[in-house]
Amino acid sequence: FSVGMTSVTRLCGTKSIPTVNGQFPGPRLDAREGDRLVVTVHNHMSRNVSFHWHGLRQLRNGWADGPAYITQCPVQPGQSYVYDFTVAGQRGTLWWHAHLSWLRVHLYGPLLILPGLGVPYPFAAPYKEVPIMFGEWFKADTESVISQALQTGAGPNVSDAYTFNGLPGPTYNCSSKDTYTLKVQPGRMYMLRLINSALNDELFFGIANHTLTVVEADANYVKPFTVSTLVISPGQTMNVLLTTSANPSSQAFAMAIAPYTNTQGTFDNTTAAAVLQYDATTAPSSAQNLPLPALPRYNDTNAVARFTSNFRSLASAQYPARVPRAVDRHVLFTVGLGTDPCPSNQTCQGPNGTKFAASINNNSFVRPRSALLEAHYQRRYAGVLMANFPTTPPHPFNYTGTPPNNTFVAHGTRVVPLKFNTSVELVMQGTAIQGAESHPLHMHGFNFFVVGQGFGNYDPINDPAKYNLVDPVERNTVSVPTAGWVAVRFLADNPGVWLMHCHFDVHLSWGLSMAWMVDDGPLPNQKMLPPPSDLPKC
Ligand code: C2O
Image (cartoon, rainbow, N blue to C red; front, side, top):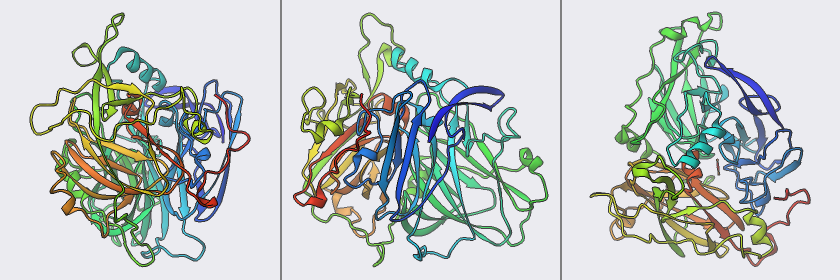
């Protein structure tokens, strides 16, 4: 990966953006289950960078995970770092992205892992496989957007367009030539490998006159189900089968993405379109006039809940669902926005003159000055992290009535220590402070099983009785529903320090983040690998 600045024109404007090997979106990586990947990053920019292999478990090998100041110091200008890791026990659609500030708005690409040689999919083999990455385009420089938001305490500017593989398409000014077109043949089955790499928006997706059969979520097979529209959160990936019509009623059909949100703030309320083209000889000049697929309204939370309730893991002999049965640790997190008081020497533009913040259990995560993983490996925690992250909410909460009076947050670099092989049940409750937004929570180092979810307050007496412990979906990113809760279980069998955070970059920047610090196990193959010799210094 040669990382440098490249001029790119979108929406009638040209700006210089960070790219990998001059490409936007970045290069696609293809691997097979069991492969070892070696990616050498050369940073030719004048600012720091690091890369994350989103959804890759990185067993015992947090050194290759990538979040800056968590598992490594960033790669500085003029420096290099080799990400060296093996894909063990995973196959499916994942992706890579920069993991520092908002750099991932431009630095992202697909990471596709095929099953081991000779191992078939648990469904008929598709005729072709096509990665489609959804993204966002800002006319402004995104690094100044977020630094201004952090300084003034206001909500940041929102994006100006959504994109298909980096292209906004015909619904935006001067973008018809920047339209993503997928050429297909009639009567064939395609597998779309969908990736939501947008910064701050959950997205609806659909194709006019076509249905989609979901077969995989976050690189885990699911029991197939068919829908006309789907919703995908930032950080999530989804494989869908698309059977093209044998006798299409038109030569081309529109695909579309549009936001799903319940925010009370501003958001990018635009729709991006792309083209599904049957006849390769007709140019998609008519793209502008194609009827868009009917997508749910931007705040249709019921449509989202209906869609989400369909996910079940295969739970077959070949692909068993290893849901932890017994629970060693129960953890309850409140997840949401909050505020900080405005410093006396400043005027803040957040709600009621405050500064925006975001927190888990009222702790707003503070980025340390050196990497947590090194501190953990050397057992030198003083001045770097505190192992006292609250595992129950410090304030009572009730989301059915008026918002609770606990919007102010504490600040700290806090982690939850876990003994090796602890089975954890984590309930995440949305707080609906500052608006009932959902929060796509992403966990590094683990997949988890989504055993339950609902609206309103989590009920610790009655809700656990309804958990699905048979075939819950296994994922790495789950949306804590709007004014609701979600329960997940995972086994802490991967030693290291693993970040968990909201995959809306604005919420991550405001502190909606924490880390699990997992001890080594007793056996040699249960211990962290030693750090590579080229590990960057802070
Ligand atoms: Cu895809 Cu910590 O991120």
